[in-house]
Amino acid sequence: MLLFISRDITERVQRREELRALSLEDALTKVNNRRGFFHLAEQQLKVANRTGNTMLLFFLDVDGMKWINDNLGHKEGDLALIEAANVLREAFRESDIIGRVGGDEFAVLAIEASSEEADDIVARLQQRLDSRNAQSGRHYVLSLSVGITAYDPGAALPLDELMARADALMYEHKRAKQGAS
Image (cartoon, rainbow, N blue to C red):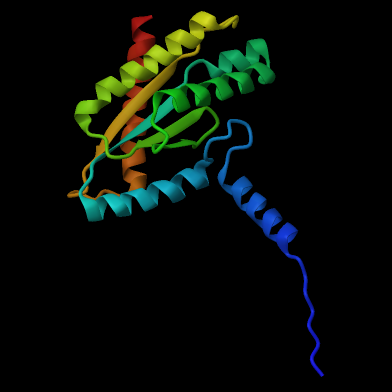
């Protein structure tokens, strides 16, 4: 006697996939969360080590988030983070990896990008910010402080070290902006 038992596991597979996506995606901004960003970026570093392609790591901080949250409320702060993520999506290529890696901090790994392209990318980012600021009815100007470091496959620095370097450069940029105002 043969007995066959059949179950449709489609729902279970879909739920598992949804949970996996939730574990890698920032619920607010819909970009990768820290875990998702590091997972994808580590994979790309391995590819770059094999292919010899250079990349750029951008570390970005939304300026004035404390003021926005304290004076306009956390709902407006959330909207600022969503807006920042949208600006990053517009300024970078679809193949680049964008992640929210801290409260008001984002990282972007620009795949197959060289140091020579950094100024063009920053100009594109600033243009997107300017465009959105001109159209908004906000009580603040959305701005980002940016630190950039290049990934050289010959040096093969670990992602943590690249992040630390880009983070330090971002804080230098933030201090320079504060000193200029």
